Amino acid sequence: MIGPYRWRGPYCQPWHHQSVPELPEVETVVRTLAPRLTGRQVRGVRFLSVLAFRGNRRRAATMLRGRQIEAVRRHGKFIVFELGGGPRMTIHLGMTGSLLWGGRPGPYTRAVFELDEGRLVFDDPRQFGSIEIGAALPDRLARLGPDAFEISAEEFAARLKDRRGRIKPLLLNQRFLRGLGNIYTDEALFRARIHPLAVAARLSRARVGRLHAAIQEVLGEAIASGGSSISDYVDAEGRRGWFQMQHRVYGKEGEPCPRCGAPIRRIVVAQRGTHYCPQCQRR
DNA sequence: ATCTATTCCTGGCTGC
DNA sequence: TGCAGCCAGGAATAGA
Image (cartoon, rainbow, N blue to C red; front, side):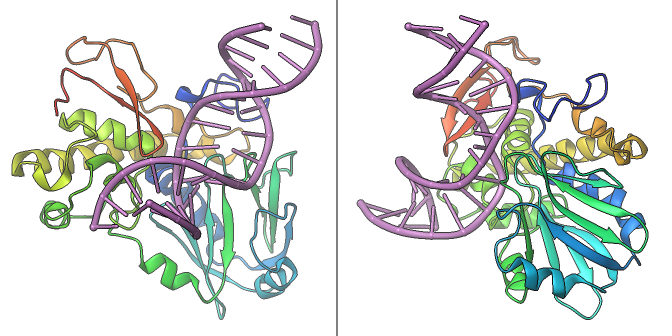
């Protein structure tokens, strides 16, 4: 992995030091890649794994060949490639996906895009990521909720108002709000001092406001720390920016809460490891 | 609407 | 030391 660590595959550190690509990581990838990819022409595509692309790979390669990349943007956790005169392509990084500009294909490379200038390599050891092309795509993207980093406090409150589910599963639901994943959800709930199992509709106006602010704060800080090392990010060396965010609760079970000192607790919510301070985040 | 369980995958960790 | 088994989770899906 990255920074002070030598590349020995993506799992040199325990999980709680790992950043799964969520909104800020995808945003960083897009900001890095957009200026390099925009205007480039796809010369050819190789899919090195059956799982990387669900569908007819040969047809997909034909559809992509010769297309110009007109724009690269983020939609929630999806990376959207606007291709001239053709359907869109999306890449989702899943759990362990990464896109490397000019990278060399390695043991976990699932797809290689050869461009008129340069090359884009999609690595994904666990293969939870996916590449999609086709007509159904705009629909699928449109079904997602508003962007977690763009939604206003008013709209956020309005959307929460009649939801009877627990707050954490709701925040993870991409059709409710797009972009948050397990880690930043825990971090935002901690900052807002809200219990992950609190019923969404029953949160006070003040708490909803705090939660909205906490989400913006956490995502903003993470993007800023990712952005600060963008130039490093691009060389195959890595994802340094992804690890600069300091987690306060995620992966810190048993460690003292940075606010009150009580030991951080870990429970399972919606089949996800969930970290919170039982003292600061009351039900 | 909301909840739970299951599936996909693999490296690293645990425990015997 | 070796190795089986478990664990992590984004998202789709099925079923309650």
